[in-house]
Image 1: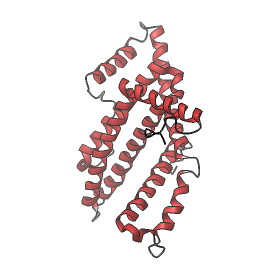
Image 2 (image 1 turned 30 degrees about the vertical axis):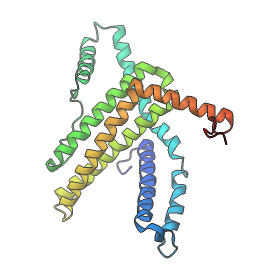
Image 3 (image 1 turned 135 degrees about the horizontal axis):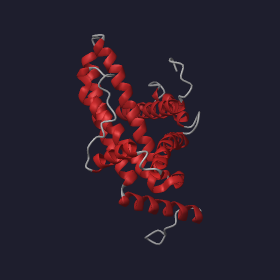
Image 4 (image 1 turned 90 degrees about the vertical axis):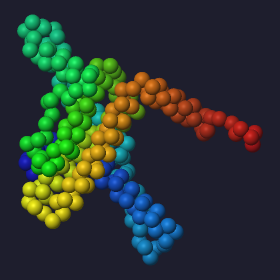
Length: 252
């Protein structure tokens, strides 16, 4: 926004989801630590928790915003794939483009980075390992998006279990980039808190990278897809029954 960009809807949606859910988590943890005292008005946290709950609903519910994030990103990726489809129609004239695309997919198949993503020039050298994890996460994310578009095409809009996991991966990637930017500035300016911030970045990027890996795997894994289909069927049966579908095992 400071640079005059008019396209920041995805960033705004990610920030809203992240902030509202982290605030709720922090308030919930505070009450957990305080125990029964957390419910008392004297602590003041019970009111904070009550007021925070609405933020996951206001300004677009977080569930809908997750779909917005994933579908908007997929729309951009789809436009890139259209260029590749055009190239396939005339392979002789677009040999270089097709070879490049084929090389990228081959590298991903054997677990190698395509090398397209590098944050080295944007991040302080002390954060190089965390930056590398972020770059690899971005690369893996892009590969999964391409694979899903090729598999589902326009039908991807109906795969909400998958879209939710793509959105969660995107939110984590954005968080990784944000903390790297913040800590790089602190280290470059020799702030007293620089060492502390560096540790926070390393912890966040390590855990976020693992979450991203899990979400991307679930978005593409056949076993997970079967589980998603079963969850959808269970939900439909409960709705159709107007309540729980199963009977009480004790016959009550």
